[in-house]
Image (cartoon, rainbow, N blue to C red; front, side, top):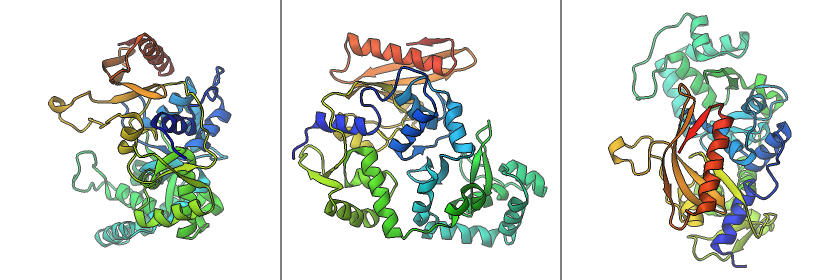
Length: 385
């Protein structure tokens, strides 16, 4: 079966929840949030708050004006629908996915980090374990105060200034002994023993091979279509981890090889992927949205070369500081440098760069409507294009 680029775009967008009728006209409820979680399989976390924290944006793109407290509740309250884990990057995943990521927690990298910390701070991990067993979920600062610990490690990264308590908690987080029971309003993790947050799932073990098959299965469902690099990148699997899993799913018929000579590598279609004749998307996408986070995939599907320029010196930026792709119909037609000026009550679109052939009266009106809706969702009084 041959798949054209427009067909692949529509398959990809439909798999990600952009098919007609998915986002209803009524106010989204937890049911719609859960349905989006089920589709995406994971939501990437990022602390950048230029518009909104990035984990909130994929749901707005698909659901419209939803209450972000629903996502917080899914993460923080029982029955817990999401937990934090290293998946794509730092991510929110369904609790059932947490055991499938054991290979990340038992990797050589995690073990080396554990050993290095334990050598530099002998006995500290046991102190942290003991305190966490006694306390309700607690932030690193709260645990420092509890331990009356004020030593700060030497600053080695522009964005970090961690005490040994914070570093130790992150070591335990990476190895799976500790996880996040939620976040504070300041976006600080509330650490707790994994068994407290996950119950029996904390001890559940799946073989690495079975886990890799399930993770590729989830990736394929979430993407709809993609080459091997797309499938393994979703949960950041290596070639060695992903290749046998892809072969198994091809053998069982869950993945179907298709002809797509415009896309490098063998391309796989999930057997149950919808193949709509049209997709009527209208959304500003987070830089960490699954539609665009794998940049080669975005370029293959949408002829859209995308690089985030937050860490690029200002004078070298091409499109702006925090640039959100704008998808309209089944194409990415523009990119917008957006900032929420909360003090002034404005949503600012500093600049809009239109893709070739992307600008017309319909796309201009759709972009303004989307920006206006985003301003309302963020509680801002005005928007400026």
